[in-house]
Image (cartoon, rainbow, N blue to C red; front, side, top):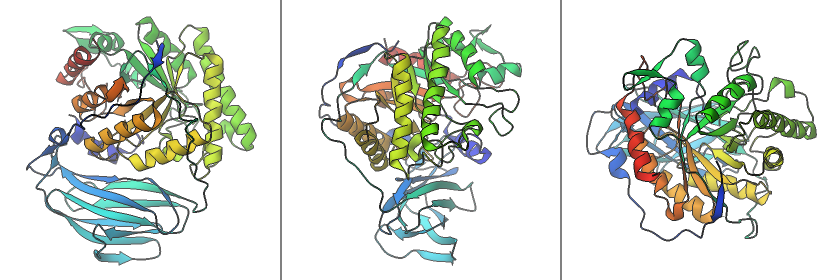
Length: 482
């Protein structure tokens, strides 16, 4: 997730709303699909923000590939308004065009070699359009705007038309184990920075270590991100090195001392890695591809070995963060599927060599984008990428509706016979947990809320006092994990 863009943070405010491996699970049983519309829609209301989902963020540059676009509005608490009507403009920077859902023409406003703009309207709550890719391998920026609200946008990556697409064989899709324990997690990687600024946290009127507070309210997992050299001038934390190895070792000890499980999220960068940027660490620049692959493996092994040596081996490891567009660009960009697979395999091999009992996650920022999710997993599995669990991010402004998320997860567990985890989310806390923990055949591994200590998803106020959202997790733990 791109956590540095203040505009995105403002929009997202509307949504404030141990790995022991057991026996292999059987195939998913056919069950009626639960309808989540009442969890995210209201009949009427006052629009407060635009929501814009693209059902693909990776497209083939063949002049034919299309992605469904869905534009809607939400009220002040993030509920989609079913009767909303609103004019908007949609712009495309790059080689692509907009087509109305019924293949008719929409009203053009501007057309140039680099930018095109059209007018349209949200009627009865939703407007759907097609985005058709051109023949240029590049990035396309699609933005929806209106006079009333902040714009909403997507970055689409187009990949070569002659790219070799593979389908996994039946032998390559092997049922994965049920991963235990099921996760009720929180990413609190910001904690050392907050504490350095004097932040304190309270529960029941007493100041406590926030890790203990989370544990008291049902959380059993903590997720930490780790950057390669965040202390670099262009890194995440110049000079101070927050979220580097030293801080990760300190936090891991606190987590394990509290009796909680640890999920380690390798960003393979000196700063944020997400679908919009996967910047190669400065120390890895200039390496050949073979050198880059071996360096990634040795770095992964080194970090995990140091954690293991202090008695804090992670229970689960992510090989990259939100990697649907690849890792360590440009070599590991999704436009080169063979390179991407080789890098991911190097990371997984490192985990297996340090501790074969540690579960490996592949994490995509594609909560509701089923076609793209299956494109990615098909091509990685067919190329021999080994992993135990599927991780998804779900932020409604980018990742489609709750029903799309549910459909995607149901399809993934059926196709790939592995557990699924919503490893980043903020909005619709109750709905997301209800959905994951009700997946068929107990294939919902769990959830991990992103940075609940100080962001739009927070469960404490500015003074470190608990909000009612913290109590949700007592209910979730009691309903699903007891």
